[in-house]
Image 1: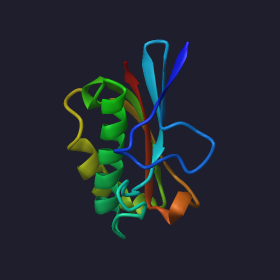
Image 2 (image 1 turned 30 degrees about the vertical axis):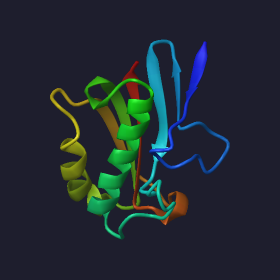
Image 3 (image 1 turned 135 degrees about the vertical axis):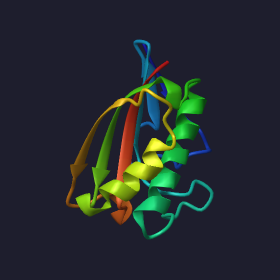
Length: 125
């Protein structure tokens, strides 16, 4: 059985997908970009500010699902440019206690809303 997770504390889905789905003891969070849920506008024009907003959005979705960053087991990071890797990584790391989750990071041609970073996570429910 799967359960849709929805919170007003993170941006609403901008397409036919859920903010997250809980199923099989896991929470699958859709990718988040740096949209401010209060204004529905992109936060900042550099990767540090955008990563901070992305992580706060994910935190809100995880909380709505009854879990948190301590239970994240996997993440995927999509960067507009790998030149932003170190700056993104600094902010990203500050949200995770040891041990950090497994992860992949890839450079992509374009992200929704022309964001600089998008991150999705899978957590234990």
